[in-house]
Image 1 (spheres, rainbow, N blue to C red):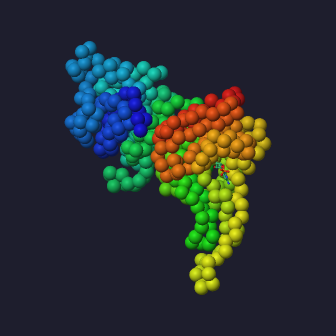
Image 2 (cartoon, rainbow, N blue to C red):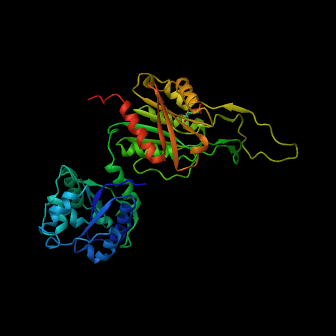
Image 3 (cartoon, rainbow, N blue to C red):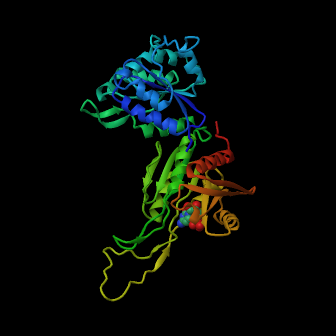
Length: 406
Ligand code: C5P
């Protein structure tokens, strides 16, 4: 996807072994459609060459405030004015200390100081040894930087280049990319809480077998990601799927419909929005055998079914949903007559908004197309990657919410 299309990112590298990850991050920015201008400190150049970063960004790298390539000889002004965001990755402990003091004796800190502070966000991806990360001076500096308007992107934990293990590693390039894409998205759900169900459920027959369906969870995971990007606090109740958890999303894994109901009811008590994308099994085996049902020569077993709770309908009937404190959105996977079925389902479930899709065109796929049905009428969202559709759906939900009470 072109998640950063039209964006110009200034990528600043400071001295640290995590510079090798900055090469991958730079590639990630370019792949997502951004133009990238790399600026490196002298210390960064000890770890990775300007040649590498120029090749990956497709632009000559800047490293000095005396760079005469700029006609006015003011790279710190020109580079910072062009940027949609300045990302410092890796950001060393020393560089944070320099930013705290507003130092301006080398190009990168000079450029950060000279940036139009209201218009050009500064994002920092710290990278350092665990003791440096834990040091009170680092914490003091980070608090000051946050107060001065910088965004600190967090760190990873684990094995460090110095041989020690702990917090302070730079986040992986894919993690940083997801966080930076999220940062640059509009925030219509800031201050809201969103709960999403996703994936199939698994209804056990015995400890080994059960019934389930082909839902991949991709649409629900994309909605959870899009809601988080839009500024919401997101809980994702997921059936058994193989999808990575979107960054910044709280995930609760469940198996059966009844477990999904319990987790969802708990989570929606505080929520503003509930989006039911899960393909919940309508029925479960009425009896669950404690041990494996054996093939004992007496023929196949007869399986009786019991009806599962309808999670969406249950939540939609709660007082908070009826009074519109909780805005409920359902999905309908149909094989035909999408419009009529979607309208009927919206009415039957008692929800303000429903997204219809054709089962065969969505299950397991990366793309989908949606038909939004509400009280006013219908709206088609043409075939597109699920994340793109999820972002549109989230914007549509946000538009329909009552304003946040002061
Ligand atoms: O009734 P049907 O399964 O077609 O409705 C689909 C919608 O209801 C989806 O939003 C789905 O997540 C939700 N649902 C549910 N619990 C069920 C069945 C469906 O939440 N047991």
